[in-house]
Image (cartoon, rainbow over all chains, first blue to last red; front, side, top):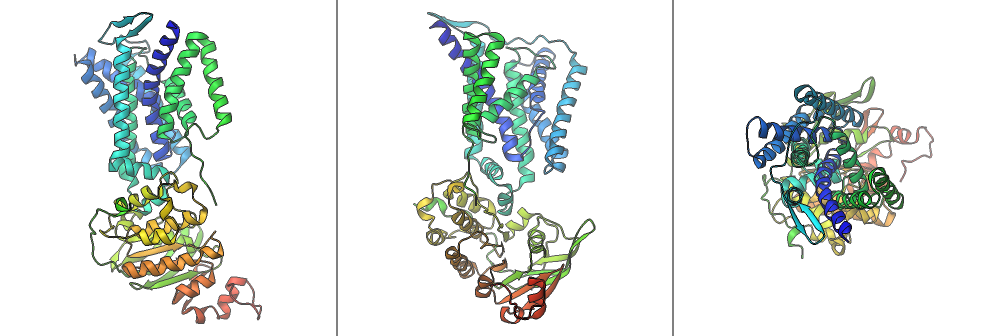
Length: 288
Length: 260
């Protein structure tokens, strides 16, 4: 019973982080039609910006987290506006460009901060203990922030003109532009939003896990996994799949442990995709 | 029930009719010449049919007029304003709106949301643009909350026309509106064209292979062939010309007629 509760808590906590990462990833794929290989790099950048703000500038951690989200958002905006936008309809070129951004980010971080992990501790310690359960406060704070951010993203996408236009462009770009929607104004903003989410997650999660130049690689892999499981480009699918993957990972980790747990995650996701190839909430449409 | 479908935007320009003029438009893709010196005028409120064999450049011409492609040379004027090379979304906001050969509806959105998007983002939309009667004619009124991607093909296609109508166009470019429709569904295109002209008096350019439809709707047609304007005039005059028949059938069979 204790381990069940622990697995649920870990799973939901992981799910919140994955959802925030996957939302950004699926937004860029859905709206721009771009697979963003730099997503993990932006996560790492967010972690380092927050760490530098706290350790070098003595900025309070919550402000540093906000600064990390804004800084990565600005990098994303500039990259889309001045680089990606020029080749936005060339799928191979966008793959190479986002991969290039990732390499530049990771090399830049390596040169600036070194290859070793840096000290970056979560400012709140302690835990809630009860009869058979133990919940670290840092996990609760991260989860609450992730849930707030996910709610804000949903409000932005479903309650603002930016969101409505973005979803229309994701649905059918040619028709949306023929009706007056302006992709070249929206694309940099969408990329900035997604990058900011990756940076926010990095600033929140790296103090709990670890912060080193290479920690973005598994983040990219997990984002891919969640987004494909949820249905490419589906916002709701990415959210549901993120929590599902978090729970599967936690349960298989608790009950199977280590490498067996990771293997179990991929097998379960593989079976799900065989049963439902378009993903959990990926939509099939009626053709001619 | 349809309150959300009524636009909340005020129209920017009360004049809903405009003249579209093409002056010596040419287009090359590398060494490939698609057409040369294509000129015509579409007066306000007029309907012009463009026909021609496959590969004549009809869809490329629509792509150039609507701003999807830039012409190699020549000018396009909307109400005497040079719009050559302007982007598609900018031209859409000025009232030059196109539809597509394939279905042009938002597959993931419901019918209701799709219409709301067309109202909200066109910038040309006007208070009181009433789409209810068109929704009823196209049997969409009972399906407002269904995702458009799950509608039958014919209804998706009609919804695409309706979305273009919801932007209150001055000039409407219809790219093969009857393609893929069953014979009994094609009369809805007639309904749509008459309705749009009555509602805003907009000029309409129709690219189409269905000659019956062209005859019914277009008092004037233009034939594109081999990158040039082969003929222009009333359908009964143009479609009986030997060179037009040959362009369509690729031969000079004396018994041949333009396909109906």
